[in-house]
Length: 540
Image 1: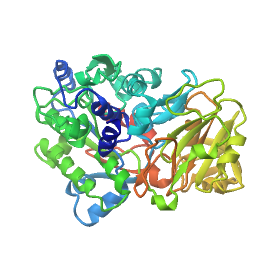
Image 2 (image 1 turned 30 degrees about the vertical axis):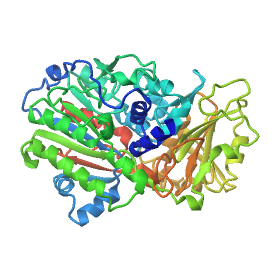
Image 3 (image 1 turned 90 degrees about the vertical axis):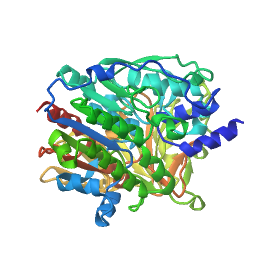
Image 4 (image 1 turned 60 degrees about the vertical axis):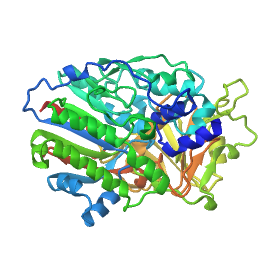
């Protein structure tokens, strides 16, 4: 019976905490909504305090939106909403994402303005030395079932925003509250704010888990989170049933935003997350002709029309559309596209998913599609693990830290590079570095005489690698796969013939950014720099 349910869940596969919720539905005692707590008073206090005529800021994040799809759609005149926003605003095709290129880490960087060494969310899965636990926010149905529903659900729903996200680092919602501005989040994975909200899992979730009947969380003034938190319940019938991934879909997000617009209840800042493209590209692979982008364009058009017209939309709001990460095409299975990391560590006692760490455990694998963390629990020496990994030519890069230095080697290669912060070389983001050995390894362009460092195929790679390697305590390596391949452990989700992300190459790292309704430009084209820019727009 469980096998049949797991097969059913794969239809709704989505890399993120929402996959956990769908899994619970299928293994629980029922499969449809059975009621929810009374609607929260979000609508009472969400409206901007600045006055009816103040210009609002709407940030729309489309998961896995890629610039080549926009380019093709514009060339073939199939994206009228995108075309209008671009013609009446700014368009950039090379916004640099965070690393690993996984949604929870990217959203954390976007909403805190920091890389993982500050915000402390290393990836969709990682190992906590403090808790001696493999943290997983919901990577895939089989992996969730193996690890256990309770710990995955607890980490995704309670600990991600409540304990794991650095409590000393303010989110944009907390900063805006301090500045006296109203904010809202629709389906955002990272939502920590200053206002109390109640997440109310449907009754059927209580049977297979120990999750409380309701969970109090801190969020912005308005918090919509699919079936867990629907402030419009009883007002608007939103698509949040099982077949619509419990509200984690574009229509839920757009219809919620449209209600706020039409009823003059927009906060000063509204974050809107659109997840649908991601699952399509994981299945089909990246393609400039993806029909999902045309559907996204239609949904954006309804949002513009909710203001009365696109012209009125840009008079009343700054509208920003952003991709979170791209994808690289994964080769077909017959081309040996999946790198089974566990098979490389034969002879070592590697933690089995779902098991507890013991004194005999020597290694832990935390796989994030085309990127992974590999932990050595028995020795401070990481070079032996790196030497094992580099024997596989499908491995892209292996990196680890030793004191102030970060070491990098390539799979199947012999050369190395090492770098550290605060050297004499200055990159385009005014960051300072020392780089030694083979600079070509990471495609770095160095002009020693002018003390300049520029990036090639791996955008902002030094800072992004530094952020991942200092994101949490432990003795570990960062591993990436070469384009066309992905990493895996027991029951990890894989995508042969489809698309994957996680690594730091251009295909996965460069995303589109559209800004309409303002002439102000962001200081740098990096995800991590957008928070201050957004706050400036809201408070101008």
